[in-house]
Image (cartoon, rainbow, N blue to C red; front, side, top):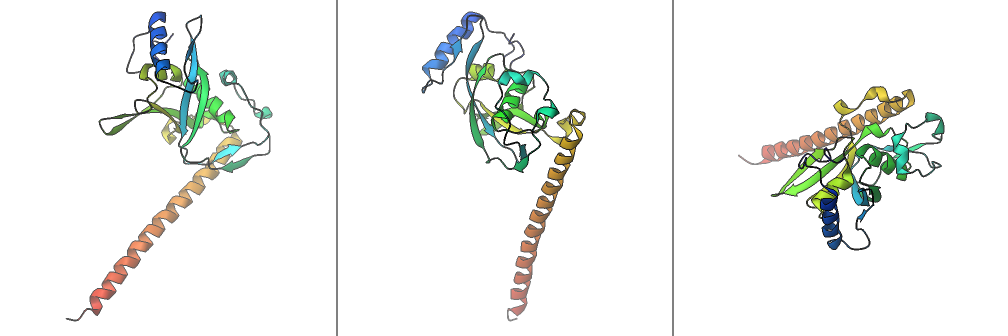
Length: 225
């Protein structure tokens, strides 16, 4: 069941190997954040996800909390409340969630968004791993069918070895035909706002450079000789 769970380790672990790794993992963690092995060979535990979202998200205040298993089905637009608002989530906010070893990346993304009452299409987002090695940060985008908790077990509890990050999907990776017309219109509005903000930043930057150069020219002309 876990043969494709990680690019770095294609070997499926036996039940005994999983048991041993969980015991080693639990010896290194505190605050009841260890993993628990079930009779069927699956296991449960906690993962931390850093939210590094650059664009605003759409939130419905009266959305009901949902189970992670709801992510297996499609979201019915009729079930999404009409009252919505867009805002920026705190940069690098961290959410700790309890998941199963059989919960996929797509399910974890769906569940995370529901925790924050975000009604944007989950396909706008992607889950990445970050690993620090030899002074470098190695980043990998996870396939939707991968198992985050299994990756956590293989890497151990050290977040330097592995951490999870939720980001927006790159434009060329987004499946636009999966979005409804209102979602596409909302996304276009956010893109236009982001474009204007970027233009203003560049204009301010070069206006400052121009001012500094003009001041330097003025001072050079005023120098005697």
